[in-house]
Length: 160
Image (cartoon, rainbow, N blue to C red):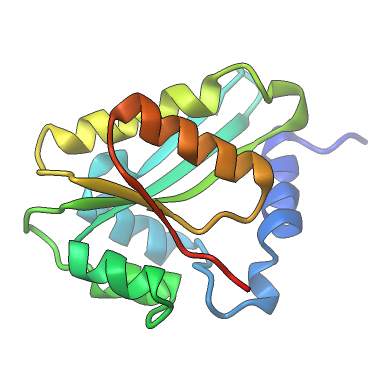
């Protein structure tokens, strides 16, 4: 029996991010989803083809200070989320993840959802920059394209 879209998305997340073996990464569960939604309703986006999710986007609005601490590797993704205060003006958006099933790649869906999320957050917050921790060349390219289209500078956390 073929896997459902949801099962394939979970499998993709495990393959790309391997959060079980990397304590520095955010492990998305119900508690994390609730926290994200409390930061802003546009933190999580999904595209459903009628048979389940085929694209998931996760962005985290935060402060410039926390962005810099994350970029400089003094805090983890989980700490970035936990330390981001509620109900204050956010100046940065972390492009946390964009997952797309293979047959839906290069169709502009992730780009569209990410730009919509950024614009929605910008309506309420003075966003001045984006940041990313790229895991794949495709993710890096998407982040660079998003930054260009949104006219926001992009900072990167680089692992060596």
